[in-house]
Length: 174
Image 1 (spheres, one colour):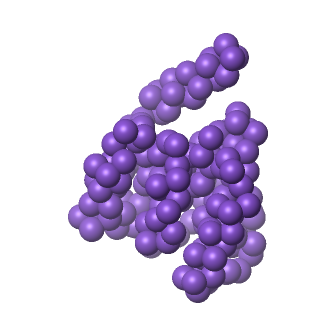
Image 2: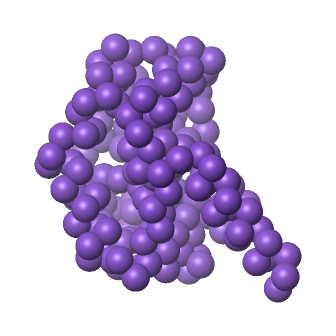
């Protein structure tokens, strides 16, 4: 199974990816772990490309968490399923706000080494407005259009929970 998880910041991509990795017993790549260097410094794009390519070459089955559409588009082609978390902006805002307060100063396992969680006004504004700009939402639309046979769109927590329950039920039957 190869699954690409994408969606808005704060929609739960990393949490879902971890759960899917456990359910299917496959490696998970959180692209944020290779996008940043310590203290939130953005890494060289070519290094990210190499890391994603290496991950794809080394793993037959996987879950990849993250958007970063300009990096290694092959992962969308290779994916058996693309899960798009299309939660509303306020849900995403409050999730990221509470996460940053709860985890202030903590090194999360889905983030690059040396990138400690912290409340950030600029990130909050990104979650509310930046990630919803036409250019970015067009990328989501293009993925849904280009890969419609393998895209699953989940718009809220209830849909996500039901989707996960369905996967677990199917695994138990087999």
